[in-house]
Length: 321
Image 1 (cartoon, rainbow, N blue to C red):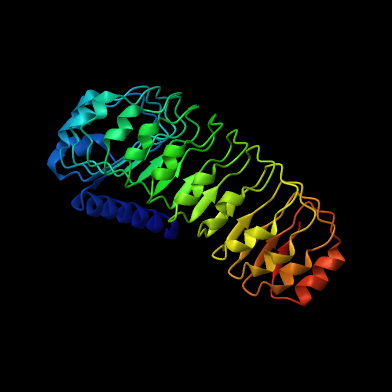
Image 2: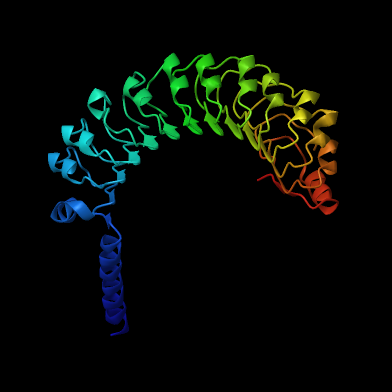
């Protein structure tokens, strides 16, 4: 009896939530959205196994948010270009091979995610979206970035991870408002000096590339998060201490055996990841980092006794297993 009552309560609560959402312009059903086209502000259809999209989508003239991630879409309906008020479009994890000129009317677009589609080439139509501030294109198969990317002057988030990029084009360094830049899982062997122009950059993700030496060009940046995991670094220079704003640093899966003396000047560092390196002892400089809370040291040849003694004499938690 109690179990049955709970089921009724859950069903009732969900129905109330659904009605409330629709009154606020948030819809999770295409058919219900088509019944009230002028009322739809957000349409969320992730993981619906959609392989096509009804042309009537163009009737939702007040739509601002469209979430279509994790479906089976191979192409987009022409009606989509009528959504001139659209601000957020998530098409990640579909089967698209193009994002073409028919989308040129989406002038108000601020957020675009085309990740995990087989685009192969950077969609040039994106450069028409002057208001774009968030762009994700990871694992799309692109190997070059057109110079016109410098036109996206409102961009503050750019993720181009899991592609076939060998260099970072100079035009990216003209995006003065960038705060997040992701180039994980590409084929970068060096970082251009011009990266120093990105004065507003706060997060730089360069995991699993082919960097052999630490890119000192980044030392002039006011980074909060820096990830260099999975490269071929054998040492970190003293100059890293110039990034005094750093709070998180990822250096796992490199060939490091020690940290430099001036590492202790990273006075704002809170999280340090050193898994899968060659440390035989915990670097003594880490004891002097007053704000450091967590060190990840898995898969390093350091004894448990040393780890225990280190934790007893500091306020730092070490993850070693």
